Image (spheres, rainbow, N blue to C red):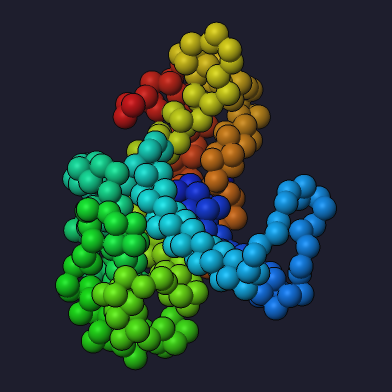
Length: 307
C-alpha cells in the first residue's frame, strides 16, 4: 500500500484560520453597505441587544474600518500560526538551523519572516514583499516600537515591479500602496485582500518546499509518536497512553494490522489517494510494510528516537 500526505497539518491550520476570508469580508461589507444606505434600520431580535447609533452612516464607516483592521491582523496571525505549527511535532521544519532561527525571533512575526527569507531562498518575491510591508504597516498603525519599517529591498521590489503587482493582485497600485504605508493611512479592502492572497501564495510555496525536503521516515516516526500520545485518559500517565494505543494498533492480528495502521495515519492527514493538484509526500511501500510489521513493543522503540 502507498500512502500520501497532500497537505501538511500546518497548512491545514492556516487555511482553517484564513480560508475564504475575502468572501467573508465582502459579506460583512455588503451588510454594512445596507446599513449605510438605510436598508437596515433595526437590530434583529435574536441579537438581543440595543442598537441606536446617532449617525448610521458614520457607524457603518467606522465598522468597515474595524473589519478591515481585524482582517489585516487575522491574515498576519494566520502566517504566524503556520510557522508555529511547522516546528511542532510531527515537525514539518526538520532543519535544526531553521528551527533555531525561528526560535530566536520569539514572538515577532517580522523576525520569523526574516528567518523564512534566510532559510528558504528565492521565494516568490512579490507576495513576500507585500507581507513584510503589511506587517510593518500594522505595527505603525498600532504605534508599536518594533519592526516599523519594511526592509528596503522589499519596497524596491514593489516599486520596480508595479505592473506585475497590478496584474497578479487585481489592480493593486504600487504607488498608492507605498504612499499609504508611508502616511500610515487606514488600509483599503483591496490592500487587505491582496495581503490575504499573498499569504496564501507564500504559505503554499513554503509548504511545497518543506514537504519536498522531508526525511519521510523521520517524519513518519514523529507522526506515529504524536499519535500514540493522543487520547490520554484521566489519571493515565503518558507512557501508559502510548502503550495502550500501541497495543490497540500493533497488537492486532497481522492480517488486520495493515488496515489499523492505515486508519491511524489517515487520522493524521495521510491518504491512499494522491492529490493531483497538490505537491505532497509519498510513503514508500517498503516503509509502510516495515511500519505494519512492528509489534506494540518495537513500535515504541522505533518511533521514540527523536522525542
